[in-house]
Image: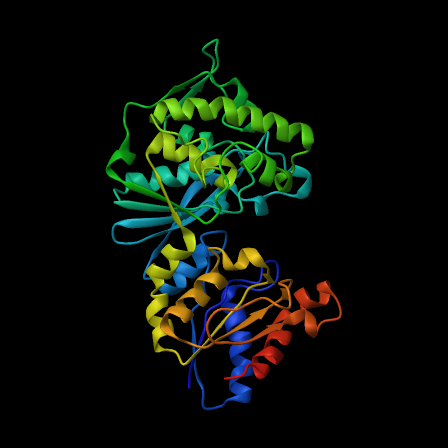
Length: 368
């Protein structure tokens, strides 16, 4: 029996690798003859860099960068033969700030731009920018500033690249040198929110970055003002494009200014890591994540793995932290069972703190 364990991380608790190890321990206790393989996954959000490093032969690169508030840090990205992977959260992530420091009016993606500039200077042909976990809502103006763009107010003064400056931007001035024109810049994400509007970046995501109601209105106004300029600059409608609101509008900004393209994070990661072939070799597949809900099945890891299992006629199990899907949910294909940590834990806190031990127990309960 060949068993493939292909989960996402349990956010705030365990990495995808640790999830694999815990479930595998339980599987081996119950089924000593089983051959267990790990295939940790991510969907392009924070943590994806670690997954790619596990699967691919990549060289870590460390470069001087800045955090969302402009403080120096050492940024790390991965370099292949003629491509690079940069995670926005590395230099512009919410995890870099204390709760008191979170304010999308003040934060900037400039540090991510420094990392992008370094990769461009190395002459790579493709750069994958992993969107997710950002502390910013600057519409990518920080990244663009690091690449030489200038954003000017009506009086000709330079506007700082942060959320507060968006509504003051009157003109976009690109640099003379444009090294990105020889490089394909691919933005990996699976959100479909546009830049502006009730489902836009400010209204849906800014609160978790520290914005109150007044800030959200201000960011939305800035998004509409700069969004119109993006549309004019790119001669295309990027301000209402699905996915343009990803990572505080980085997606819309880089599509407009750098000609970047949006691509499914999970689909790209699965292709790069050979997920389809790994599932094809398995007799049973186990996937999972921290919280199972309807969104889990829409472009996320769990839904993607299940889709591949259904296409290839493979039975699968789902192991999660908590399951809030309705009990009557109609699972596709050969679903062997859903197991959740919360069925064993006495509280959410215990479930997160002792997740590894509970996953070992659930591994023993998987029906192969």
